[in-house]
Image (cartoon, rainbow, N blue to C red):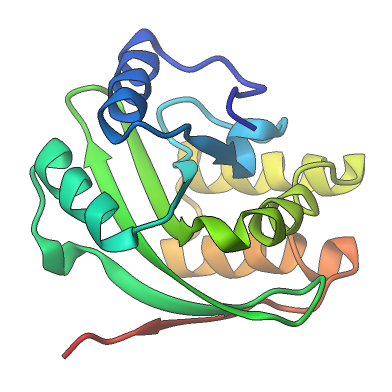
Amino acid sequence: METTKNKLSENAEHFFQELSSYLETPLYFYGSVQRSDYFPGKSDIDVDIFTDNESSAMTKMQHFLHVKRTDFKKFVWRLNHNNKMIYGYKIMFKNPEKGFNTEFSIYNEKIKSDILKEHNNKTVIPFYISWFLVLLKIIYYNLHFIDKHTFRYFKKKLLTLGIGLPDDDFVVIDPK
């Protein structure tokens, strides 16, 4: 998953290559950028980063992205395939001048295989779920008939119950 099924813009390709080089680690792409429901310039690009030192990786990303440390959110997630509880960090990076948004997830290298397996479960999906996701995204991105909350709710349901998985147990831990 170090490459994407869908072609990224030159700006995005260059950005991710520079970030990977700066962090000295590969970036792993998952989510719609690996499926047929990716909408360039509208869908977020989801990226996993695995490291032996999450704090160091966040510091490097903080400098590269020009963001505050408080922009990184710690979370706990129960994986569906083995019920393990894992911890990680997320940051949403919006890059309107380059035309893409990215959600980065940072994990310890020790849980890499568990995370990649979990993401693979939502990469190869039945055609009818892909079709519904494309339709949902047209309704949200192009026609603006539904709000963000409704869009996220239906997308989550399609990517869990629609493919035979339970809802994800995912909680952001408030650092305050």
